[in-house]
Image (cartoon, rainbow, N blue to C red):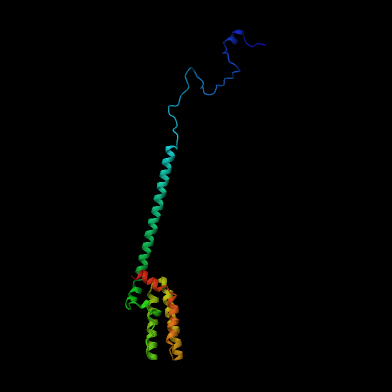
Length: 192
């Protein structure tokens, strides 16, 4: 069975197989007698330049953001420290009236031998001083200052009730309270 005329069959190109209009690998079809377009630019090996630029910009912005946050945090901490130092000024001025009081046992609790009324008066002066510092002192350590004044009041009440003084016991009681406070550390940080 033949299709078409013999003349049509001779006009066909001779191939070694069927040709369905598929182009063999590596050859581009010729359309309307023009050769296929060739790429004038070849892809370079390595990462794409736009990816490198975008990565660099992201890294630079991240570093700038972290540095800005760090500087902001540092300035806030410094401003807070200056505020605490300003709040501590009256407390520090009061401590300066008795230099070295924080290095004494129980922060200067009266231990000098004296008669009962004189000793009670010295203890009351101690209590009043710490009560005043508790009212005017820095807010962070007011509880510690109040604890010292309260403990002094308790000791004074016991001494007045007993009408006798056990100096080592009262000093130990007051030293126990003062050693648990942060007053020394606070003064070392904000009063010097």
